[in-house]
Image (cartoon, rainbow, N blue to C red; front, top):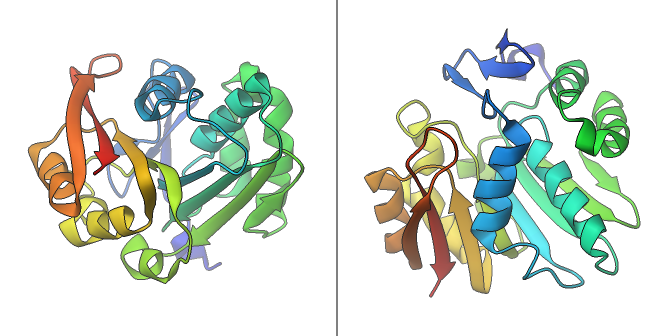
Length: 223
């Protein structure tokens, strides 16, 4: 990985802010609560969990969403590993990831294996509880090459106003193409362009209460 692929960061307390997009990686008030509300509850989890369940994500970031999903997977006690595939254009350095995740003691026992894998340059992490793959590069160039299909999508790119590439209609169509029948997607964004893009891709989109100061978020089910 070349140095210029690393995200340039500022920090607000323990929360990293991407200077390229002028947007924090997670809520400044409570990133873990945000993940649970938007991505876990938004995809009907853990109620839909089953052995072999596959989560896919646009924007791995700090890895918080992955570890929050893994924590829930372990609490419920689903057999076998949670499958998790994430697409990330600007992979975070292990030291920055560790600093950000240290804000969440509830998942402290899950952090070290992930951080050490990233520190060692690995882009996959396999255990009896997690089968993780991080796909580096622009998702517009990598997602169509993926041969998997997800049961649930975490759409966690930076704000559509600041990172419009992550929300392009063509990319959302690829999300739909890589979604299992009846699969779902959730995002913190309720922007009209995002909702229309998901609908054009074949999702049935609904608006739900957002987290914190955000009035609304979007939930989607593949028709």
